[in-house]
Amino acid sequence: MITFLILCAVSFILIILLTPLFIRIGRMLNLTGVDIHKPHKPIIPKTGGPALVISVMASITMYLIIQGFSTEVLALIISSLIAALIGFLEDLKGEVNPKIKPLLLVFAGIPILALSVYNPRPVLPFIGVTRLTKIYPILVLASYPVVCNAVNSIDVLNGSVSFTSIAFFTAILAVSIINGLEYPLMISLVMLATLAGFALYNRYPSRIFAGNSGSLFIGAVMASTAIIWRIEVVAIIALLPHIMNEMHVIFSMRGLKSAKQHNSRPILVEEGWITANPDPHAPLTLVRMLSAKVKVREDILVRSISILSLYSAFLAVLTSILFMR
Image (tube, rainbow, N blue to C red; front, side, top):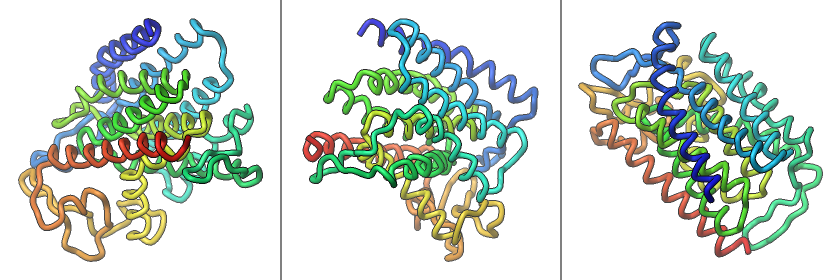
């Protein structure tokens, strides 16, 4: 427990110190984005990803030094860094073709297969242990594009990626404590401490964005934790708002397309108030549904999405307790 507390402190202190540094770096290198939901359209650095990566990886590496080497944790580190690198290249060079990006994210799943840290016998509610020997490796590779893009797609408002990810890792923390899972417990604590510190800068009004590197990194940590330690169902339920948002976007846009390729935006912004776009051809997103027929402030929308994520996290823990024993 003392070790865990030290790791949390290290993660929190690092992210608090590094984030202002990367705010300055983002402005110097012009790695910025427009905060389109504000009346004055401020320019915000999108360099939060490197700060998140360094803070999390420093604490996880410290844990390995203290406790000893772990192939499972090594696989999580490599997978997460691959996803973060893909996101960082996108932040540097601009948006990657939305049809190519999922293919690139498949590479994040290769370390899991190469180091053989998965079990093709997932535990399902009511059914128990199943055997998916042939199809499971394919599902492993597919999970990274799905989860990483789902996290990336929900990162559209100030603080949305921070608070929804906190909800997810709270569920992982609870399940880890209940089932005595050491490594997921450590990872969830480190992620919670890091995200809590980052949220101080990312919340409304945001001073820094996580960027693609940050959201893809978080998504890869989620996917790796679920696969390696056999808590896939818990992760899927906890990620329901993310997955629902991503699926609505894909179906309403009729495939994998960039939002820039679409003529209508899902929402309209007037003097800082957000409302759903009445155009029936506009992409359908979680934010658009929550702002239907009403004008809402950005911070209220983030609160609503966070509550949905916390509810899904609660359902995930309840499912683990009642139906997966």
